Amino acid sequence: FKYKVTAMSVQISTIFDHRQSLLTMLSTTFISPPVAFVYMNKDSFTALKVMKDYEVLQQHKIAAQIYSVESKPLVYEYFVNYNVLKLDESKRLIDAFKLRGIINKETSQLTEDPRESDWRPIALQALPEVFPSKDSLQADQSPISELMNVAWAYHEITDDYADEILNWFKLQWNKTTNMSIN
Image 1 (tube, rainbow, N blue to C red):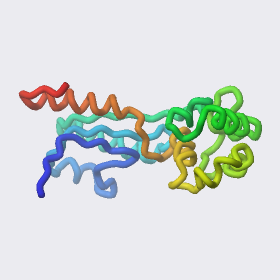
Image 2: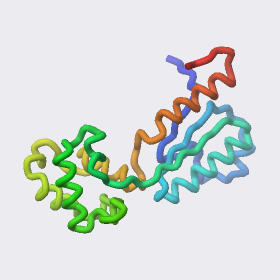
Image 3: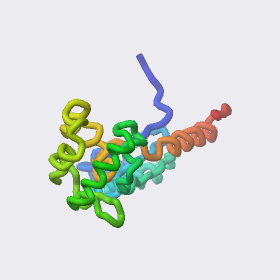
């Protein structure tokens, strides 16, 4: 099967091999569909590579857009909005996190990377009826763990900007074809 790619959304990654010199990349002729990059604001390494990719695409007159994901406050509705916890459960968990310094009491932001912090025993104590029967709390498997990583905004796939990216893709499609997508 052959497929024609009409747009690319690249999350927490790049599209070029940055071990090559920029001069080598620029001397290569390539064709690319419009590219939307999504990176997380705390991931400066990926951000730098995304900026380089963006420059290469711009120099080749290829449509590109960059979206930077900011960290999110862990408010009571955060886990509820993703259908992971009920409101009363989310309140108990977030209050326990604030009490133990996992979340800043004033900003509701995580105080450290959840991949490295010791938040799981606090979650188990705050919601014994939820763990481990409904959520294992294991990294890369647990919905709560994944949402904590998204809230931290270092290196995680996210749905942030999904609507904006799709609208931008439609705009790019409309610019390059005689057909319109609504």
